[in-house]
Length: 127
Image: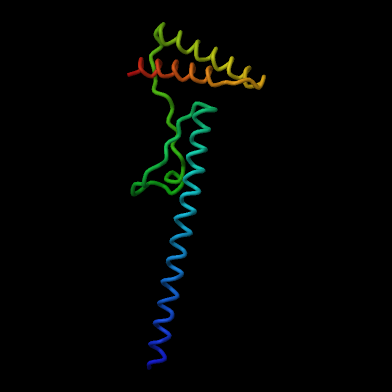
């Protein structure tokens, strides 16, 4: 009987050791995937102008595929006033200029900042 008890205690100790190792590995993997997710999210926003949100917990009755899919949030619908149309034209022109400058291999920070300012003005009009 003491042999069985010793085996149980040893198995329990091994299980706790494995459990702690698995926990550490899972946490490390979670942080790696999280960092990669944030990088992809940033690239989508910067390169394609798409804001992608991280899905929250799935609600009951929602298909598993829908829960796993990433929700793409598009820009709010803005009524086309003359001011909005002018801002959109400026943004398009700046984006075209940005592509040309990137192709030439020159610094793009100033143009990217200008595009951000114009998009911010556009968002302010929408609110």
